[in-house]
Image (cartoon, rainbow, N blue to C red; front, side, top):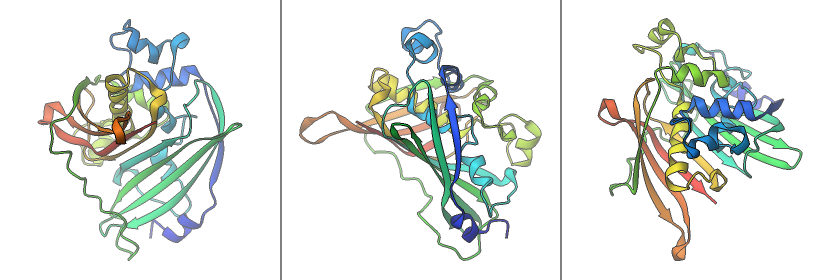
Length: 293
């Protein structure tokens, strides 16, 4: 069997040293759509080194990879065709703001392998620590078609929950560039699905699709800009399920619902749903929550 669940789960964490600086942060921000308009002071917070702050979702690419999907597929006991792979979900918890420059230790291991019958789901957890202690923990869920059926634990339901029935508190639209995937992949995800039309066709798509982590970052930026006035330090957690593909050049519609803390305190969580405007708001991110501090 291409996925040996027992071997993958028993493997010791893979540890690597990672480092990043302002250039990596700026490239990531540009790769998720920051910098338009180029002279807007709100955008310069993402693109100009003298004003730079770090969107927490940068943690998913810090150090240049391998990112969650590729990292999971290189784990012991995993040998699958990349064309059968989809990024299913992502979770991030930050212990403190991500610095503009840093050196840290990243320890990654597969913590779950689920048997969905016609597919398998791998969960890769990465814990990142620097000299001052824990920085962040992220988990990537990786869906592998055709690799289930060995009788393993089925795991949580993969069916996305519907968004709230009430009207959203805020709606933001974010147009994506035609070359958005080509720019985003420079942050470390070289999967040809996002650049090579022939490979995309082999995977069942008419053209290359956008990285899920690019949509993930663009949606978080919309929340931070719309509800937090750009204050990235308030984000403590961020999770999503990838409900559908995005094509470069499309427009994301980001709907947001705020949940107030008890006794009238500040907003503690934001529910988010993201759709593709040009395809009748087809869902692309579901079960999405931003946790605030």
